[in-house]
Each structure stands twice: as structure tokens, then as C-alpha cells.
Image 1 (cartoon, each protein chain N blue to C red):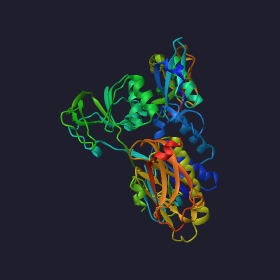
Image 2: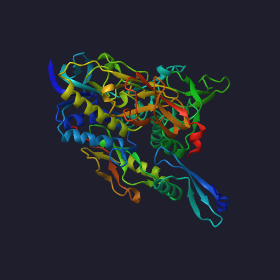
Image 3: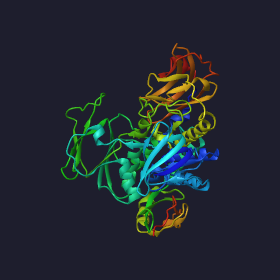
Image 4: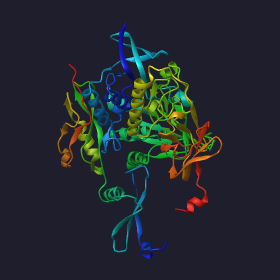
Length: 432
Length: 132
């Protein structure tokens, strides 16, 4: 069996994996990147539209340009990588088993592992749309790969379910390739993706955005012939009598992403309620020495934010290999981070008590849009630790807070902190 | 707040939703009785620039793909190196669709110079190696 050794193994060579690997190499540790596709770059390669890089490089780039800059760095730093290789198992002593067509089974030994596998898309099965099972039903990212990488058009007339960014970007992309996009249908009462995509991908091309509607039936036996859409009430239940038929030959689904958790679970790490792994403030999972970053941890709005998070994961893996790897792990004392009112999830899931003097980066998403809010951190004894005003919050935009808990006077004996996004009391509104 | 009376005599001719950053300001293009245009509702200089551009001469960066011969992939992602007039995007797309280029290609390579004489080049968005 072919064997490899490295201080740090990075699984996945997308925006997260590459940025993490570069940080490890810069700290003079050995690193190996494992990628299952035939080239480095991950999903960013198929995101050929612009809008990337404003934070990372302070210029506007396309997805391929953004990731090419990282690929170039990987090559300049002579960071080793293996392509066409799928990691299938992580044992608890940090041995990895992977397979590819040339070497068969491969064993890889690591001191630390960075999980950067990203997400996959939710499919029709995940949302249970009734009807036949004809050809012509694709996830939006799958269609994006066909159109942008492989050179196929998956259909002629489209309905897109879900107004996430990938869905709206595909609406414009397909229009540019000569297809007709009949409608983008969104179950929520508001658009899910970024405003710029709503303006530049839908409004620019007069593509109707139908909110509070969902697809309730797929027509056609061999090929999609159309879809029935129905209005939904507040509980997302179909309103009887609101059905409309739209003729189309293809249905694209842009209905959310699921972290690629198989290896995370296989390694024995815990998952949290947002779907990704439980992490501490160093992006370390519940298994010492296994770190995670990028969309496998939480879905990000911008690739720039993925790179920033991945750099932290890389640096923390380096710290682990240099300072903690050889030592017996002492039991970690932690403070749990809990999601309160209008918080869908918050990362990290826990904070190490030994890190209370450090700045902690919190990322969270809200459940519903709101204006003039207060973001509050309270401990389990209801003591206020931190508060911040925000003009508006929406579920599609991740909120980032950088808080030094010690400087804000946290009680180091507290067990948990609760994070909530609440309407701002009247007194504070008048202050503006 | 003191009301500026002259404001009321202005009429809104276009509402532009700023896409420069996620704040998404609603910028109003207003016309006074003399026919002069002014902009309101922006919160930064880039927002004003965007609104002016969008009002007088809307342009977009075009990102699409071009066919490739002998490449690792059958397509290469390309973009215009400058924004192109919104009305001309369709013509540019049709022009790009006519062309097939040979690998290898480097990111930034100019694949079509001054396309349709619009002042923008079509450049490669990534490296693409040749396969034998």
C-alpha cells in the first residue's frame, strides 16, 4: 500500500483547503492536499461570474481568477497535492485511507487534519416534490458545472426553484446562453440571495421572481413538461386554489446546501445543529488536532470569508502540531455558545476558557429579517457581556462579531453564553 | 430636521438599487423643474458613482465561456476586462460564441482584442493546460 506522511493533511482543494494549506506551509510544516476532482480549485472554478476578491485582494475577480491566485501560490510554494483521490476513512489515530485509480488504497499519516470538503446540494428528494420522475430535474450547481465546465446545456426552458445566489446567477447564465428562464420561485416571502444578484441577474433580464410560492408538482413522464407552483401560507403549507401551471422542460433546484459530513462523522467528531461540525474558537472539532473551515463548517456568503476562516484553521493546526501534538491532552474547560432569539446558529459552538483573553470571532445567521436590532451576548446568569447595534439583519447575510470576552468582563466561571438578536428598545432608537 | 422646501419640487425619475455593497441603498435620481438630475439616498462615494453610471450609461462586466481545442476542459471561462454597455452584451456573447481557441491558455491572456470596438478586451479567467 502506498503511504504518505505529512504534519498536516488538508482534505479538499477548494477555496478553504488551499488557503489553509498555504498557511501551514508558510509556517514551515509539511502539508499535503487531497482532491477528488481532476484539478485543484473546487466549486469556485465553476463560479465564472465576477464579484469575488474584494476583501481578499481588493479587486473584483471572477471565481476562476480568484482561485487561480491560490493555485499559483500552491505551485510557487511547492505544496504537494494528489488529485483524483477520494478520502474514504479517518481513523482515530489520524490515519487517513484514500483511494484512486492508479495507486488503489493509500494510507496517509498526519499529525493534524484540516477538513475542507465543502457542501453538496439539497436535491428533490430532500424537499419531496410530488409528481413523476422525468429527465430534466437538476440542482443549480450541477447545471452550473454542465454549462460552465463541461459545455452542455441541460435544457431550453427553465423554472428555477429557490432564489439563493446560485439559482439567480444560473438564471442569468442560462439567459445569456439563449435559454428561456420562465421564473425563479421562492418559498419565502423575500429573496434568499444577495441584492446585487437580484438586481443584476433577474431584474436586468425581466425574469419574474415569484415569492411565497413553491413547486408542488412536476409534470411529464419522460421529460419535464412543466411544473405546478402554489402559493404557501406562513407555515409553508400550500394554499388550495392558488395553483398555477408553468410550461418548461427543465427544473433547477437551488434549495440549500448540506455539509459533506461523512468524514467528519467517520473521524468521530460531533455535529452541531447547523449541520456542520461542532468547533471551538480555534476551529478545532471535538477531536483534538482535527480542524475545519469553509462551507463544510458553515455556508458562507462570500468566498473571501472562506479564505479568511481557512487561514485561521491553518494557523491553529500549526499551533497544534508545534505545541500540543506531543503532549497529553488536558481536559478542556469550555464555555458553550447558545443560539437565542432570532439566531439560527452561531459559531464557534464553544470557547476554551484558556482563550478568554483572545479576540473571539463569532459568526451567526438570523432566522428572519429584522431592522434596528441589538445583538446581545449574555452569560447563563443573565449578565450582559456585550451588545452591538445593527441597522438590519437578514438570513442570507452572515453576521460577524469580534469580541474580547475578558475585556468585556465575562465571568470566567460561567457555563454558557447566549447570543440573541432582539428588536432595539425604543430608548436606543431615539438615540440615533 | 428642517425641511428643505426646494426638495419637494423635485420629481423622482428613477430608483436605483445600489449593488456596490450588501447594504443595498435605494438611490433616487431626481429631476428639478429646470431638468437637472441629482441623486439622493447614497451613503458613500462609490454609491454615487454607481448611480450616475447606472442612470446615464449602464454597463456590466461580461463573464461567459469560450470553446477550446485540445484543452483539459472543452471550455474556458472568460470575461471582459472593462464593463461593456448593457445593451451590447447580447452582441458580444454572440461574437464570443463564434470563436474556438487553442490550449494552453494563461489567465489574463487577451483572447479577443477590443471586441466589437467597444473598448474592452475578452480575457481568460484561468490557466488551462493542453492535453495531447
